[in-house]
View 1 (cartoon, rainbow, N blue to C red):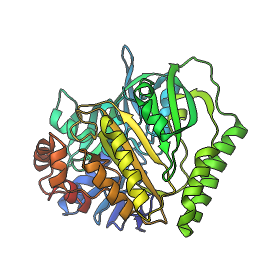
View 2 (cartoon, rainbow, N blue to C red; view 1 turned 30 degrees about the vertical axis):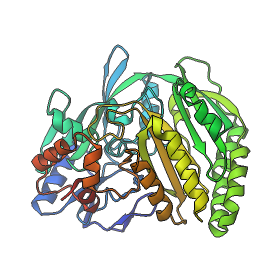
View 3 (tube, one colour; view 1 turned 180 degrees about the vertical axis):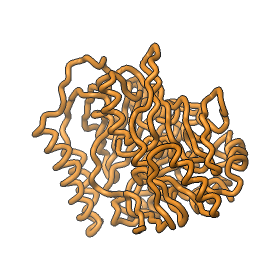
View 4 (cartoon, one colour; view 1 turned 90 degrees about the vertical axis):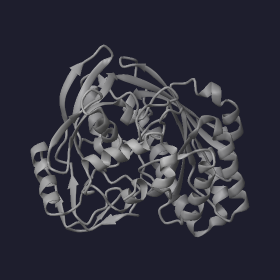
Length: 434
């Protein structure tokens, strides 16, 4: 087949074969046949991971034909919804809304597949809310011999733990069961602020349902976003068509893209462009379906690294990043994104047993990222940071084992279910070991 590229175009793969199974039976047959032939197997969703997690020279599986909701079991607070693993998050949200349901939290993009999103630790923001993997109550996974295993906290609990966030190292997901809530709306309030003001008021701001902010490097400029949960029947007041086009298409994508090209050619202009960007988007308030507020369109291509750190360490980390940028010749035109999550119990979750602040750094896809990312990584590592599994980082299994209390348990399950490393590749060898 033709060479596969991820969304950021920094990873590519030329597999021996590309398969698109339509159901769990076909998926099991493909996996078992590949294993018998001694070929490695990797599954790919939307390709939104910045790492080589899906790269293989063996069999590359797309789950794009395995989509849709399979079952809905009502609960006191919503429903347990079983969905095929290839379903894209934006499609799932629309289907759930039609049923009067919603995912409790979402990230800021929703183009990923369900399997890819939970497997790499996708999360949103909200100091009282967890990432997607912690919303999972059961999975169906296909192992190397083609066996189909239903996993939950009550059945194959260890396999369940590594399947709901396992970077594709343990099997290929066929279905995922989410604990969904009743549909709700979000009232979003976006406003400019200064970095010092935002950090000084952080404790108060984190009382909001969902809070995040974007800091423009080389400036004090910040854009804050506070989302308040409302009942699903609350009146809707979406962004007007003209205002939305100007803010979200022209300024956030069109002009921003032009600024990235200009800043890449003339780095000395970046601080001024960032200052202008931080003031360009005016304060606004709007109300819409939860998933329409959580997610936004990202049309400017970039590379990204994100670290999960203790919330208390956030001011120090941002101050050290600012200090490093002031000392260096590096100029960064992308805002630094800061989000928050509650502690969870998922073995490989970046928020495992720790309330978490996420610091995400980006670089335009045509810009050089390594010096910047390495500097931020060292700063985050100094406070016990954990890198996002689907984004760029430089850590190895030896370093990651010190960050995760259940890391040895993870490796033990891998040795049990995939001793031949059928689902392995170079990225997994680096982060989980041989």
